[in-house]
Length: 141
Image 1: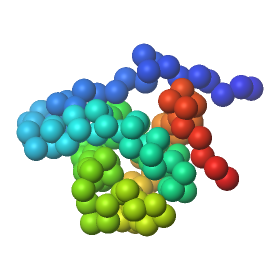
Image 2: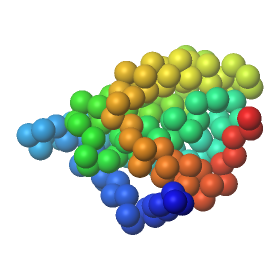
Image 3: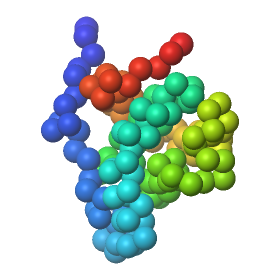
């Protein structure tokens, strides 16, 4: 049986302001800004990082998990925080330093993804692979 192809329309992604809401519907404006920044910059950073980050497929799956309405709020907010660090242009080690620039991002994202791995579903992973192909992101193995 072939894997199902998920389109952007079939996988509902929460808008940033909704992704930053807690269980009671209270919105954290700082987290909403981070979520909006992630949505805006994610794919351009992924394209730059793909060849330097062996975990890039997991990062993209985490992105789909972070904006999935079925993901528990604490997991969603944790992932958005880590992804916001990933897309931030200035961090502990500037990303432009080839071979070293994404080391801090890899460390943080690896830890966070391992912490929430049970919430990253096969649907998120499959959509990540499809989206990477759609965005012309290739991983060298």
